[in-house]
Structures are given as C-alpha cells and as structure tokens.
Amino acid sequence: MTQLDQFLVRAEALLARIESILPQSGAAPDWNAGIAFRWRKSKGGNHGYLQSVSHISHIALSDLRNIEAQKQQIDQNTKQFVHGQPANNVLLTGARGTGKSSLIKACLNQYAKQGLRLIEVDKDDLSDLPDIVELVAGRPERFVIFCDDLSFEEGESGYKALKVALDGSIAAQSDNVLIYATSNRRHLMPERMSDNASYTHTEDGDLHPGETVEEKISLSERFGLWVSFYSFKQDDYLDIVAHWLAHFGCNAEQIAAAQPDALRWALQRGSRSGRVAWQFARDHAGKTAEAKR
Image (cartoon, rainbow, N blue to C red; front, top):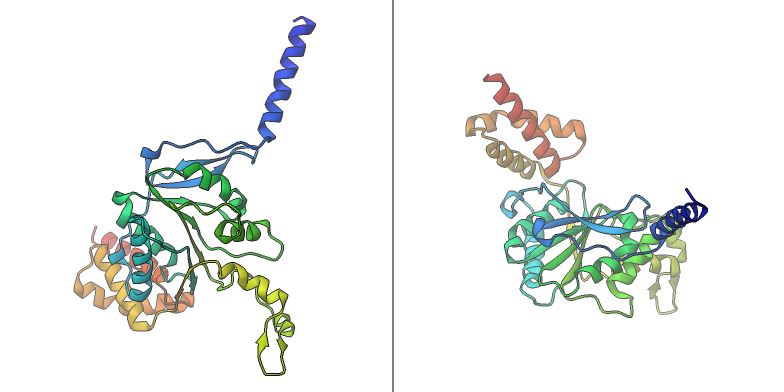
C-alpha cells in the first residue's frame, strides 16, 4: 500500500469518527410499518431515529374499569386532537398501577384507524423533542409523544427541555403533535419540607410561593389538562379481577371462588390496583387451566 493509499484510509476513518459525533436529523421511518414508534439513539448516542414497535398492547378502553371520569377526559381530548380540533397536552398523575399508561395505549388502539400514532420517548432523550417534532411536522397523521413514569431530580437537563417543548420556545408547537406524560408526582419533581420555608406572607394575608416552589410547579402548569388517579376500593379491585379472569376464560363460579385469593394477593403486594388485579388474574387463570390438563 502506497503512502497515498494509507493516507486515504486514515482520512476515511477520521471522517467516519467525526460524522458519528456530529448532530444529524433523525431518519424518517417507514410510516406504514406500524402505529407506534420508539425514539432510539444510535450506538454513538448522538443520532436519534424512530423505531417501529412490532408488538403493541391490545388493551381497549372497555378493559379499563372504575376510572370512568379519567377515561372520559382523556378520550374526549384525544378525539378532539384526532379530528383536528384544539386539544391539550396531558399530565396523568396519581397512584401506581391505576391505568395511566394503559389509558394512553387504549386511546391509540381506539383511534389508530383515524390516523393517531404514538411515539414513546425516554426521559433521558427529552432533549431531542425538537428533532422529533420537526421529523413529524407536516405528516397527515396525528402524533402523541408519550413520556411514561416521568419524574425529575433537580438539575436534570430533560426538565428544562420538556418545559421548552410544552410552552417556551419561539417556535410554535406543531398542530399534529401532543405530549402525554404519566407520573406518580403531581409536580414531577421531589417536594421537600424546606420548600415551605420559601413561602412569604403579605400584610393582607396572601401567601406567595418562593422561587423554588415556583420552579417546581412551572412544568406541570404547562400541561393544559391534569388528570388524577386514585387507589381502588376493595369492591372496585375485585370488579377488575373479575373482568380479567373472564377475559382469560374463567366462568362465574370460578371467579367468585377466586375472590379470597385475590384479596390475599393484593395484601401481599400492599396495593389494590388495576395492575395487581391483572397480575393476579394471569396467575390464577393459568393455574386453573394447568390443573385441568
């Protein structure tokens, strides 16, 4: 190999390394490959792209029980969005396992045939939101950017990136994009006793939050719609258990006989949630079917 050949090989290797660290716009996916996508990063961690999700949860709105008020709010907002009407970004907060994420997936299944698409984005990739919005802007579909189990510690970069994406950039949010986020925290950040010390009283008795509190609530306030979820009562929990046991093929007699075991299952886990009910139903229905073999 001549010196020129060696130089060219080294130059190509150097260019490849430089290209791997330069920011690039995400490559458009095959939009016909599916109805849900995940935002992924390349091996170098700098290039983002949309990856089609092959296997999607088939949960329907009718599968979500005892959250009728929350379901109505999210369904109505999503319907407005799909039909091109004004709609809000949504923050779903509250008890774990009560159907926050499942409700968003159910709405996708409900409205996918009308053009709704879902893009799941990890918290660590929220700084790429402008690239994602630019990638889908102008598409005929309607996109919900989904951030699941969202919470921030102080100083995390994704916090400010999400604030800007919601309502803080000089560029208007694309009218075919909404952001739906779920969290166990109402204000998405930890709240401490020391925050109370930053409140100030005026002579007329008004109470004003300090800068620390203002910063913590400023993100959640940028979501136009807040939807809260609460732990289920015992009867509600058993109703959800019955629904899923029937889904897995158990008859009415088997469902009634399973109630004591369902309550013990919830007690062991310290929660009467929809997720716990679904997990119990899978376990119990599987054991019942196996015993018949």
